[in-house]
Length: 392
Ligand code: ATP
Ligand code: MG
Image (cartoon, rainbow, N blue to C red; front, side, top):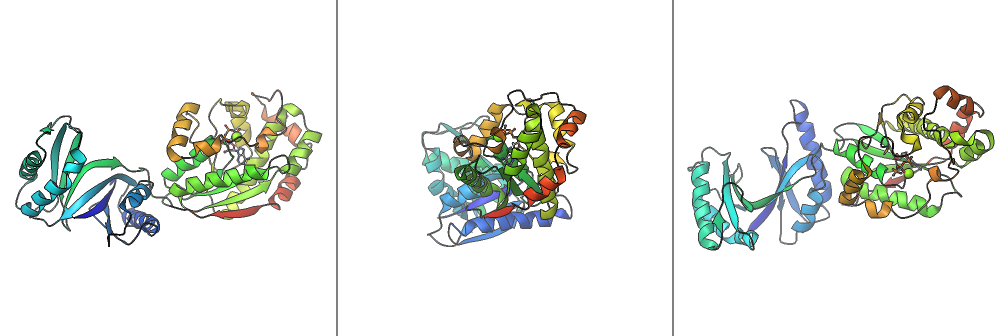
């Protein structure tokens, strides 16, 4: 029996002229991932991408897991394929469906006939196939209101498809459909989640990481690259730009009031990030900030940070509790890496009493004690880029 994957994309986002380019992006993402799991035919029709193995060696479990990370896909089903006639469908349902009903109490059949030339209507198909399944699995009952398993029979363009249980896809929009953004990536829990959330909305990611060697270690940087590697399973390749803040931090400590260190440092970070973003064609900055989480994330502090840049700053975690962010971090697989204890440049030279209600003018007085632009330019000179290749 032949099994394939049906990956369905929501039609709502696929409006008018964009539709084809969206679909092309989705097919491309699937094809990139498929090569690691065997030979597949990948084609589409009726808001569905079909992933059909060409031989027995194809790894369907691996492909299923990979497809469930593709943004833009709302549901995935494994389905058995057969010819579009009731004998073949009944035979296939009898062979294929019982394995999914083991240990379950109830089921129902839902049918959809997109091929209107098919002789039976969907009610008739459901009734007949329901009967076949009841015969094959005498212990199970039909429950049309709240079944344990929904068996789907779909009569489509290329054949009939029988599936038992749909799985949620990654949702969102295909990566690349909404421009490119620059993620400020630390080793923490929040920023990888923020990157993932924007990638889900179709944003391709570059990342910038600030280090402060020797105050931060090589291992801290490795950890950040590892986080980028995990996010890339969803977001595709990520270029991580690494910039040193060592000299800036040393100068800040020498010249400025301690209470302002973090705020000043954040303004440097944002300024450098904006420059890199413009060089790399990124149209927004993305951070993992959440309102009130730490001193630099009060409304006043965020205002002071934002005043340093002109690009839009996306903070998808802004209204989320830590617990909600952690839930996503666990789901996407970044959590265990994020909690490894390595220092971040924000945690070296932290003030004992950071300003939580800073006033921009007073911040500027401190900032003007140093040659801001010269230090930014010097830091830009330390930039090097690591290409994280997505491994699906
Ligand atoms: P995270 O868990 O993402 O590190 P956080 O709650 O620890 O966030 P901060 O350390 O104040 O918060 O950083 C706020 C945001 O600034 C981070 O989410 C990240 O986007 C950015 N950021 C912080 N440190 C760095 C760094 N070393 N390199 C790049 N971006 C950073
Ligand atoms: Mg942090």
